[in-house]
Length: 495
Image 1 (spheres, rainbow, N blue to C red):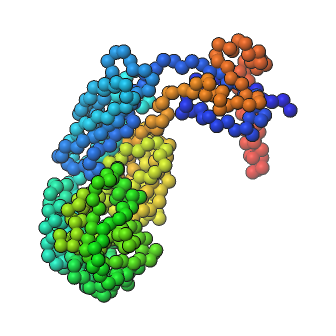
Image 2: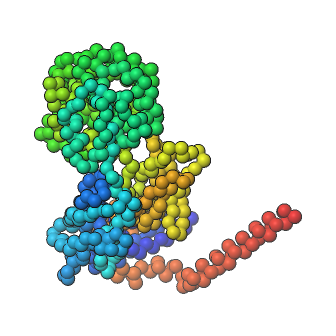
Image 3: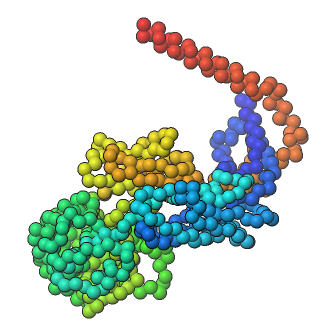
């Protein structure tokens, strides 16, 4: 019936001691919390870092955004230096200068001349706390974003200009579906679809099954009957008769990956697209429709459907200046860039240990996922992470990996490099005040004291004078004897 006496001596850091006492667990405990003063500290750290351009291109200057912070008090001496290193070679340096703000953002420039995987390390040089002084990024530059543009009717100057305005796009232009090489990789764009794809329909189906993303811009004189004949037999969608009423996009689906990826915040004054002609599409749930932009009447302006491992995106209105303004809006080029980026391999990995969101590993055709698993390894150990197939690759979780660089690989397919980082929340050394602790942890059997009161807590003597190391030694000997007894018993049973 005696209660357990528990003495908890700590500085009570906020990220390690939570203000949520559990009454049932404390019912049999006399809890005494003893606070010790926190040592004066000043901790600088790297919160996060990311490239301004999500697709790294070879031989092009890339802006790396780095957010740093400090906890505690600013030192009187000179503040530390932030370095960007590749293979232990310093590529950029920034002198950190914090003022009253606890955080700052700097931009570092980086150019890679290779398409091989590169480990990038950001490092703050300080002496006191090193836990959050390093941030690891693994990246692989590409030759460009591959796009296959197939004009089924005539060339659209706006679409052609958008895809040739940036060296990031590696464009191949085809006149008519029959002229295209079906083995070409990258984003496929069908411009001016009227219907009646003929034999090219099977080519599209096979590409989608393998994971290709297809973007379709409908023609102004498309045949609804021909469109339904092309798609209804293999994709559960249905085109309805053309609607020539003026419509303005009234809803942008902020939860769609495109919107999340392209717009951190959508300004109120950005004009949404409008059109005077569109083709309503109805779809069954089996098509996994994802609306991106909707008209007020509920019809989609931009919508995607899943098929196999791929996705097909429809713009239900022609991109001609006579019928609307999507091709000149703020959404047009980012949308093309997003789709082209999604159809290429991920090239930047900077994960946080034990993060809850998965990473994506692209796989080559022909890899048998039933017989092979994704493995993560470095020079000393190997892990098999939690994983599941997703389109042309695998979603996987890094788990509680220590910070560092790792190789992820499945079977004999291409490997990727992972940069894994510590959880930054653990670097905040802020503590609860005694008044905060007393306010949250209170009640019968709970008391608080400061370290200077130790000599006045008589009940501490009840812990006895028996040395703790002797107790641990006795327990170890007992456990060893128990283990020996079990082993001997098992041997006799087998005999």
